[in-house]
Image (cartoon, rainbow, N blue to C red; front, side, top):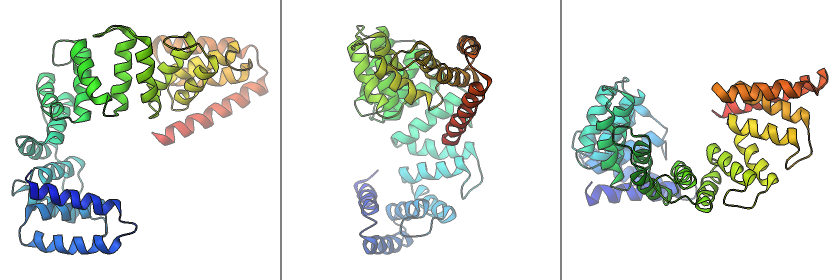
Length: 334
């Protein structure tokens, strides 16, 4: 991307950020950009496409956005090629066509466009518009990750962790997770915490694991909240504290995380961190059994049926109604 195009995008970003108080500036910048775009300036064409795509200062209009992205893309503007590819992939303003989307992503990626490189990796990983090819996916994830793209760094860490498209290497996984985690990526923070917890690719360190689980949990990642709850419950890397464990189990459970729902039920059943409450325990065991599979389902179902014997029918009915309401809220958020 040349400096002129980059400058135009930065200006648009700044204007969008103050839109509520600087509406006239948005309008003036749009008019000036439109004039340049009509004269064939690719950077301005990209900007007009972004205006219409986002709906800033003008009515959101996918067809207009696509028109301007196409003009800029055909002039070789990498960001416009990426945006144009997105429209083909999502079927907005153009027909849905994953192969055509990939064509434009490749054109942008060949210019070093990191987001396009990452998307191409995802296409090869999932077999979207191409045959699945994990090795090819890793190649593209690496190119994007080496430019500092957080999503690519996290995904590359996963590839190394699970040996997907490349030889399993926990040390390399830790390297890429750390780069993404330090940029604030919740998934990378969670995965880095796991590597510290299990001592994979790095010396086992429960305190470091707790540190990264906390950072991820603060961003509302359910798996990190659950793991942090386990650390508090068992005293791994932190003082054992059942109330804190319950709090984090609850946060994850309310997002539909079945393991957390089961453990929250156990806390209520045993009176750990709370007053013993069989009705609450039944509610969470019921939810866990509804969301779980395999051994987790068996465990949740066993506990559900065990605690059911301690309840009256009215208590069972009330707990079931509450569980249904919680599940509805979870489903609405997805």
